[in-house]
Length: 198
Image (cartoon, rainbow, N blue to C red; front, side, top):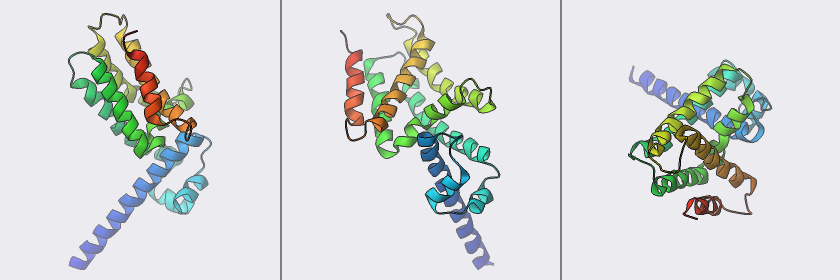
């Protein structure tokens, strides 16, 4: 009896590990190739599994996409947590959001841009996941917009919040594009220097 529980626990742990490996590999591939261009064979090859093993964990490619979006959603909450701690916006808060993005990028660059890549790929297509991606972004946009409501130079806090988040993700995109040319920290500092008083 005890051996059965131990074996079941090991199987469950391996299954969770494999599930996460599939999701993380999909994040990298979706960020670099796009969802539609990534095949199950690409994914299987990236992690050394068979296509059948992938389908053992996920019934469809779209189920993998849903798991990826769920996983990325947790990362977006880190940014909204920063803005929710503030009563009003400040350059310090903006710098903190950018700093967190840079640290995240250094650990997992593709995860930093994957949601933006998926948003671009699904925008305007009417796919149900387009709505889901907007809802995920909305968590940050709403919280940052609340911080900007009393900013004397911001006339449309929601638009400013959405544009800011797009710009921050753009820094990460440029970080991948300019790998070896400029560091993510240099790009972030360049962006932040524009926000200082002119």
